[in-house]
Amino acid sequence: NAGVTQTPKFRILKIGQSMTLQCTQDMNHNYMYWYRQDPGMGLKLIYYSVGAGITDKGEVPNGYNVSRSTTEDFPLRLELAAPSQTSVYFCASSYPGVSPLHFGNGTRLTVT
Amino acid sequence: GESVGLHLPTLSVQEGDNSIINCAYSNSASDYFIWYKQESGKGPQFIIDIRSNMDKRQGQRVTVLLNKTVKHLSLQIAATQPGDSAVYFCAEDRNQFYFGTGTSLTVIP
Image (cartoon, rainbow over all chains, first blue to last red; front, top):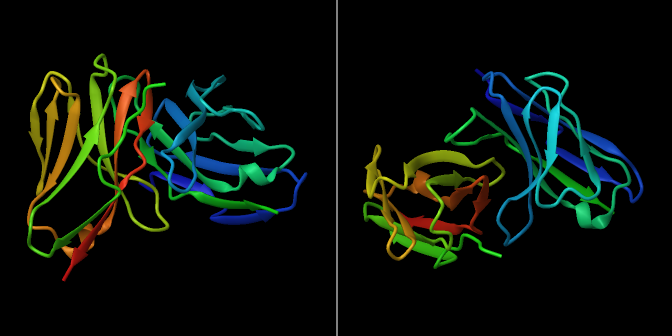
């Protein structure tokens, strides 16, 4: 199993550009999540999904959108990139209930 | 709001010694906790978890202790090795996971 796979690993965007961060998992997990990690801060939840067709906002959703058309994929969309979105983005997945999150290796995004 | 915090941002230990990383949490209703290890350039990796109905749980070279009275969680790593050098986070499940800022562990050969 590959686990949680994120692409791209690195990306530089100009202010106002848009992009999609891809995330796919092969563990048949119902739950999927997007987090951002800023220096000196704990991971912050952006959006999550409890199953295909169901998404919900986390702690810091502004400036982002998600969709969940399949169990495996959970892309994160940035429509108008801003410098405040410079961060490392992690996708994670889990089984329902009391279960640990499994993380991908992240996408490092810089907006200039 | 409530948050998970770590007592020390950095910790240096000699190879072969035991390491103890601490974490404080503030929500007494939380019933599930996880420790993660994050190496440079990688995502957090699950180490060990514990439910609130337990005080202690052991894995391979790692032990997690939960003190609900003082809302404190610790991770003990036995016989620390250079490969253990990383940032360690605790996470608290309060309907969603809340993560600490992390402790950077450096193992001195």
